[in-house]
Image (tube, rainbow, N blue to C red):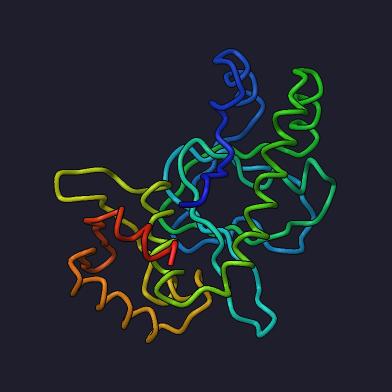
Length: 222
């Protein structure tokens, strides 16, 4: 499974630093299916997610939406463009209702400089860029391998380990899954059916349970 390259505030902030940073921000709440940041727009702010989930997407060459990641509570969105003084490299949209804190770019830059956080923030940003490059390379895998890899990443990012298995509760549709792995909706439906028949997953509306992570990893490994 790919390394989780999410950027969590708790990874590099003390409790005091976190409180100070959050004190510079404004509270916001976004409804489901709301676009927070648009690919290509100026990077004027960052979002600290407190609750809910967002998807990170880019526009494919054929105009279709490609989903690169799902992010959740305690993560920072939009910092890459701010730190590198570049336009947004991706679109960030809500999946569920999202509550968080919005922080202006100049406030973040001042804070990072004063607290000597440039090395940690920069490393996290580079990891995200590498993750994007990795996802582009993974497009060469077959649909089942791509789907298995994505399900494993979802389990790591937003899943819950229960007696039933790893439960992924979200509003992602089969079309969203297809967009994320660069496949057709029919292709995803077929591979999900095969995974169900193998006893590796069960599915319901907006809910997937992974029963055998080892077998799914074997599919990814080929």
